[in-house]
Length: 278
Image (cartoon, rainbow, N blue to C red):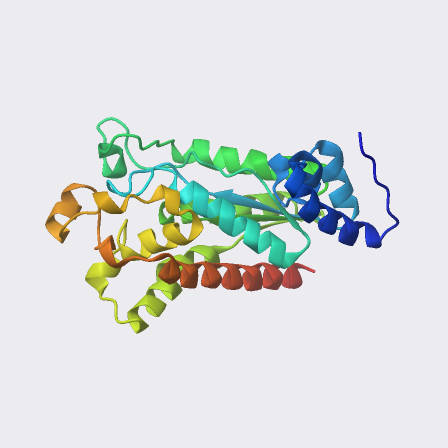
């Protein structure tokens, strides 16, 4: 087995170069140590990252819900993971926890909201908050100082904020802080929509669920989650299928505008939160 040892700080540079070359001969496990994703790393690699100053952990929250016949149920999960990875890479001192895929989606029986469509998963508010609370406390126990909550779905933003407030009350005498970053979703819901308007797209096209904005952003993150042939032919058909908006003009290029907004707004908000705490 090959073994390499390099003095710091050259080690990181050399490792990155070798990973690029070794990709041709299939060494993904060795190169995974440079990943920002917690689930790609071993516990000793996480420990080393903490010792090197990566004391920010991002907990991305997605959801498993219907988004019409043209968007996969895991849309929010995919976007939360990819965008969190980009945010962490930009910050430079952060890792990303596994995506929280189980979130409140409304009444299960009788079914309400997205639960009326096959595949949606809903959990109670208190179960969701307990999950976030325990995840954040786990991260603090390991030595993370800034625990960041970002959510790709609008329905649970208030619960995220409440969990962060409770954690900060409990952690008041410690260096650790939980940061609810509402600017992540604000960038998706408001800022991105404003940009799409400047491109001449109408409110009816942009929509509020599974319309153009939702679809384009997903295309930019993972086009395999989009089924263009299944897009509704008009608003009436779309409403019956769980769609609000007209996704037919969506493109990955339009979605990339949203990606850039979410990352830049989130990074700025996280740095601001860390600065005010310090």
